[in-house]
Length: 129
Image (cartoon, rainbow, N blue to C red; front, side, top):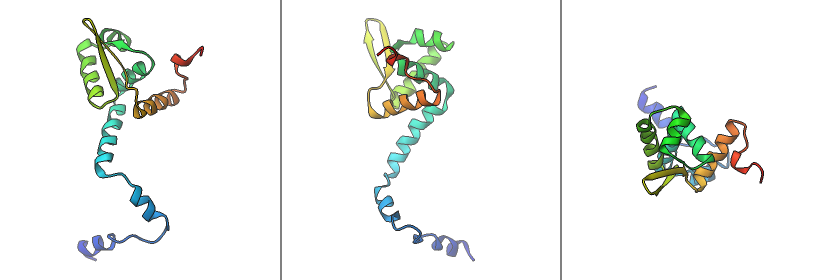
């Protein structure tokens, strides 16, 4: 069988599941998968995951994050920029200091829950409530 014949064979759906058409109709566009992939890439870096864990539980400045994860402030700033560009964290300025925290949206909330579940902890922010 030639490559052309082989690829033509896979252009039609096999009728294994009557619900496949409905599933395919609901499938997000390729752009949505690309955006999701960018978010997941942020979670693959152990340093960014540590920063996300910290910022999911407290608002912090670059210096405090740097001390907490034992990394230079410039390296931390690089990771913060990447996380902010991905929409996972937000910042605010108070005088000369910039404070960072996890974004307050659905995606960030899911990441917060996932981080807590993976590390099998309950959010320290909710203790005593």
